[in-house]
Length: 161
Image (cartoon, rainbow, N blue to C red; front, side, top):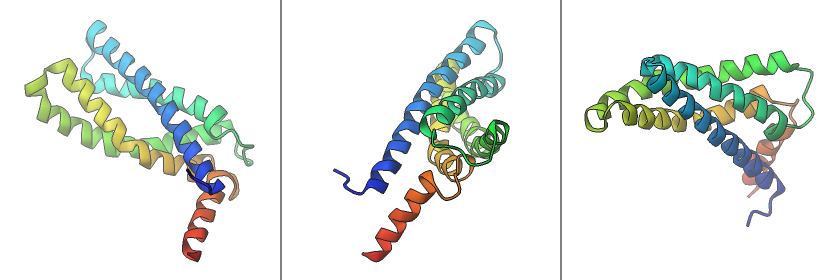
């Protein structure tokens, strides 16, 4: 279907990142329901804790699988700090703006637990593209290798047409 190796490479990265995100989503939602239903913690506090559990899972798998190419000189702590900075911005956009708005709009119709889950999933979906781009181009950037190199090659080929 896609003959261009740069497009294939980029799509494989997006697919892996998406797969990791689905696992993180399952962990996030499981922790969210556990905190709300078992520990009676408010949905807003629960989403913060649940999100970090999913985020740590995602960082470790993305570091070892999605972006496994040899890293540049950045060490583990540098990557995890960059990752958290990137997802924090995505979090501000999606969770602090999107979650409360969606939750307040639908909670009357769907009730407490279902509204929390729906709002949580919508806010996660809004940050997917943003987080992939920032992390691929900054957190796991390898001196114009990996995703950066492939994106540049796709752009150059597009400009030549």
